[in-house]
Image (tube, rainbow, N blue to C red; front, side, top):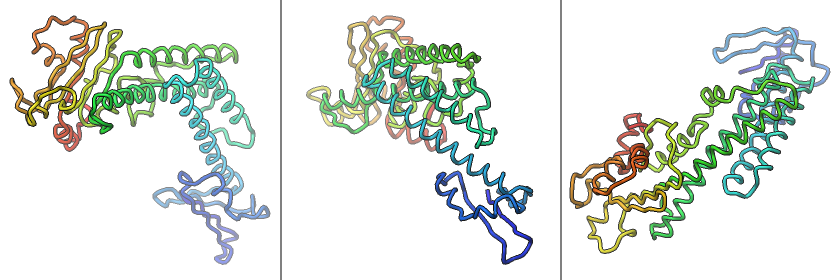
Length: 349
């Protein structure tokens, strides 16, 4: 958007402020060199992206609107950063549930107090206290899901190093412990938001609607599975089926590495091109080779496999609950992933 300030229709007195304020800090916008004596005395011409002028009779109000909007964005960005640091630390057990509850109370109060300042116009995204509380819940649940999934994946990197594979990001790790922690934290956030709503005499947010319609979906949704899937897809070797509501059994772990050479002994060079899955469930462990089409493994070769089908090939009696969950995992080569990416369909099979 451009703001053109036209003074007395004379060319020598024309003054223009042109700021793409979506990329400009509050300080930058405030330093427009507009003198106090100029405020409120001129006509303001607003030009949209199509350069169509929109005339305002009050320069002071319009400039205040731009300054106000920029400061609101800057403030909300700072508050979101606090949430990010807190939820990241919580995923690694560095802070407690009490810290999470206190963060939600603090964020709600901070934003509520900020928006109550009469210096700012009331056209921001949160027009009621219930909407403010919903915004805080949305951010905290989003980063709960993102960081639980990320911490889970980083545990897999530690396992890869332990197995001698190094930190090459050619592995993924899923652990029901982190899924369950994400769900427990989700309940904690909802309970805390309900407490705040009751304390302030406002309506509780519609949590399901917030999670369903949130725009914060660039790196997965507001749930563990979709965030985990996004990170796995970015490693180009694994993907979950797109039913994010699936729930793992307790004590379920799944580790997959693209190459098996360091995990098993006495493999020939071509045999080492196999992938490998290590599955844990209720105290049992299964190690399964993945016969990709660049290996000399016995049996049908391919560049993409469903993990349930791989497990059934072993002929071992497997718990039906475990098989049902493994049906949601698919492992593949990076070449397969790149083909999916080129087709514009990298997040689904």
